[in-house]
Image (cartoon, rainbow, N blue to C red; front, side, top):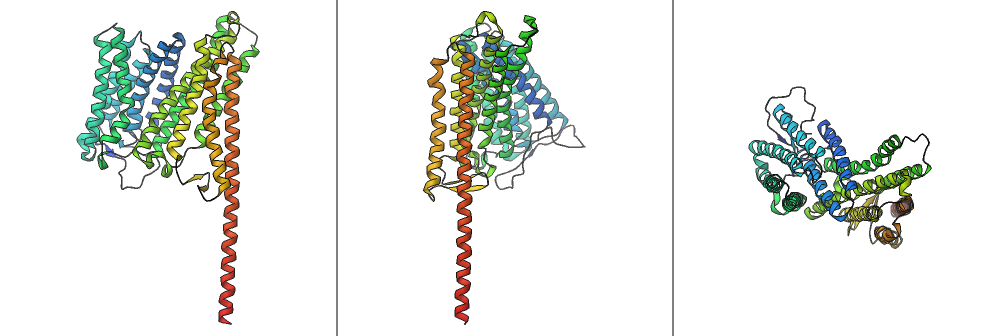
Length: 457
């Protein structure tokens, strides 16, 4: 939408326009080329952050990894969610502002570590200043969006204050941690602030289709880090070790890792509702929690990608005897468990306590058929129990990376098969009910026709 919209006559300075308002029909939104380019930068950022955690396998290292992840992902969402799902500006001036945004993003990528926190924060600040300039132009040109721009700009300014601390107090560990977590926390809670402060029409609506696509891209990028970990890492290690033969254990790790991310992809996209049924339409709080849950899901999936990289290194290094450190062993279990919990939260925000919702093309009404109610209840309980299993299994995964990868991949495969069997049973049952209702309606119509004939006779 933003700069990527198709225009044959670009202007030097153009006025941004509101993509939609609350009382307007919403057209289907799609990512444009600048957003796709930005997705490529997010892939590089995810890989850079993952390498940082791999080098610092500890609770402290994970907390630093989480702070870096949130600062980068929040910066990505400032443009690709808060700007492009609400406004459109195809001017050259906007494109130059976007250039500095991308430059700041690049600085974050190459300096994604606490050792280079000063340079990382300079890039993050440049990124947010670019967003502020975009918001200033929107506020100047669109009176309807001024209050929204002021609140979002205030959030960005608080974040910039936090990011300034590692620059001002270079080398001070406390200032670095506090500053990065201050920025990460403020922007992570930005959706809650926007939903509660901006009452009524003060909140500029988003294009739900576009936001769905953007959140889906976030999940796929973090899953893609697992692909990079299990493929590129092998090529690098094989080249370093000068091995000409193929390691059979590696191909086990390759297959199981691919199965793991394939199942996560199926589980995530299986229960994506239409824009009309999306959590963003249920209430502001449902939409806010869904948004935050996607950020947690991305963090968990990126953690899984790091653990897969450790598995590949362990099977390629004969000195490790196929083992990884205890923290590295536990990382995959906690990552898989947290990702499943985030998926459960997202699903609950979409469908929890609803009296009716679509399962495929069929409308499921709770309370009308006891058999369907039982299947639906078992479905929810199955997924809920599956969320707890990885956490229970964590102590048994120490020192057995291939076995642990196989266990988690098998668990997700089982969940996916069971879930599909539930939705298949629900679909068949709903088809039977629809046919029965059609037959009953036909019989009623026929019976009334006979009665009319008797009356005429």
